[in-house]
Length: 342
Image (cartoon, rainbow, N blue to C red; front, side, top):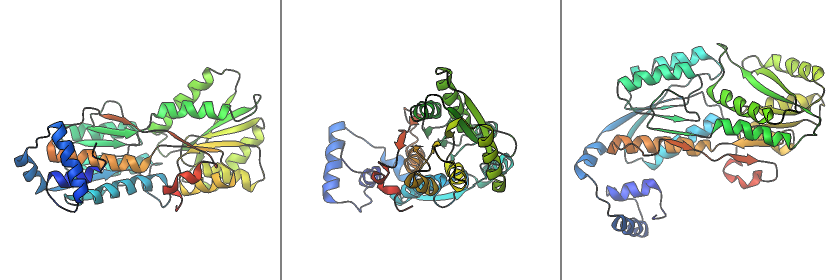
């Protein structure tokens, strides 16, 4: 309402300076309009505290999806720099269920005041959340939402709709007689990620309503990349009518690079997320489209929700926040300027 950031409002409410007079006047005008009243005693006690936020997400590699989420978290910490916050990262290998378990097992040892969870495996996340619930420690989900848990907030796209939309998009981009492939990733522990499971359901649902199309499923490996070229080439030798490929994670570049290297063209590839490698493939045309889910905004809003809860003990009325689904082609890629330096 005032046209300023949440951090600016927070500084004005608690008189911590570092704001322009114009911003102060705008915020104070809105406060008067809505009849805002604060509990000064509670706020003062909260602001003197040091807060320990544990962040357990997949490991972040440069230019990849989870780095974007961590950038959003870092931006929020900077925005709320007047509040004493310690962030402890407990990262895990998202393709290895045992790595996830090891990270989750150390969460409580770090005595968190709150936890941000980037969930991959359903059962392991449910077990961690039960511990947090029993200890009355608030937690927020980013990137996914897990059933049977009680977060104070979640920030994710509708993964089922992402899968459905991927099917609809790829069907519109390949010849009617084509077969279509869906590629997923092998994981140690033989467990699918929660997001991939929901995307697959949506994808299959779309084609259940379009029964004339044949769907082929395949897996490739992130932990044994030397196997991938052999696996992918063998798949296309056995499935020569496939003209569309949906990679239901952010690794579409792996399939695109193998096909390009081996001179296999005429294949439409759709994948997820503006990673540096996917941006390269969109630019050279080896990936046709990407579905994106605002990872920086997810990370920023997760921290914002936790800070508001810790300071004011106020839980949001709306728990589940659904991010927009952006569809990126080569033609509109330049308008996503925040990614162009990746």
